[in-house]
Image 1 (cartoon, rainbow, N blue to C red):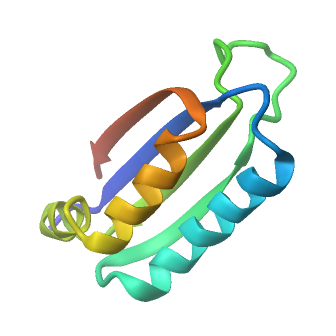
Image 2 (image 1 turned 90 degrees about the horizontal axis):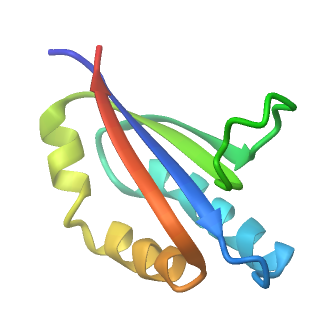
Length: 100
């Protein structure tokens, strides 16, 4: 079964406090311990001087052991809770999944 790489790019609203963003990323890091099937998480602020981020300020990558694990994660109450928290302070989001 191929792994699923779940890539999310976030465009936080300029007025979002740094503490709020840090809290969100702490909560995202905790998900790996709370939802079965997630094998890896990393995330943070855009850090390249290339300038191709199109205003997206942060991003994260989660690895799922399978498409079934990803599909179970999407409606999971813990994911829904953090999603509401994130959506309240962003202007835009891109979610993109890859198999492999």
